Length: 375
Image (cartoon, rainbow, N blue to C red; front, side, top):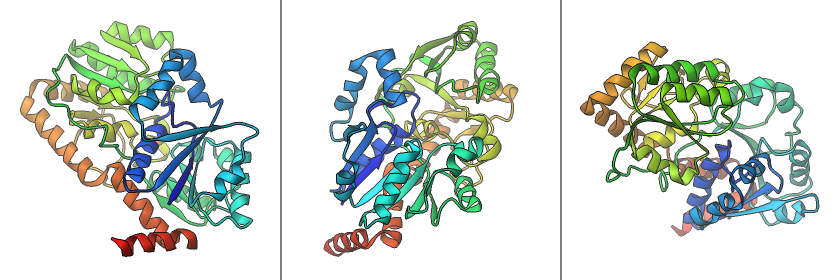
């Protein structure tokens, strides 16, 4: 089948975690014999910022790191109707411009034979409710929400006919342990500063514990203002800026431990949704200590990582992980086992195909049935 994915960007992962997940999903679809094409705006915010910060070579890295993936840009004159006509499944990410969201829905309503899903991987449903409420989604066959609480938000608001929970996950073709890499640092944090959505948490669960422990640490990410960089330096943390997602497994492998610090809107309003970095870190077999969030869906098992309920407890737990290798190894093994059993992009493609088999258009269900019969 031909999958068409409207995304903010596949090429750029600058402050754009959804690119991580879509790359993994597309790679698995291609490995199964499907065709997967991403469409992204030619002037997308993430792509534009990556070019401004790192230049054209950063975009070219995508071609080298993911040679089997296809992403095409669209501008005002792009023929969306022709692209949709050739597609079997169309997935539209919620960062897509609202007018285009509505236009794609009309194409489905006006005789399009493709199955059409809207994909939400953000917190605007609670932080900017009007923006989501104003989207025209009644012509979509379903909504893919990256957490059960977000699914319930769509259902309660009447924003979709069928809403499915479709968590993000790790692309374990990329994110895997690298046991032969030498450890050169104690702690690595990979994440973006954001819009003051976790400023206090980063101070409490990263900067202060590192300073108190006097350990070696590295921070990778974007949008860190000067005052944040000053605070990092004051704690003894090295700030490296943007890191290509393909380089992240090596960064994890070079350090003894990492932390997970979710953004405040998820903790307060959308419990049960970790950042994709948590899946990726555990897939790399690195011990992880997390700031508080509520795993209401039971995504993980006790012992996959450690929960720190306060900054002081983060300091205590990091000390234990860094100086008790048996504990660290047990955490790494348990977290990796859970990812491999439940949370890879292969698992999410299985889930997507199951949804399509039950709720896809006739064009899709017939093709899936034919593939099943041929196996």
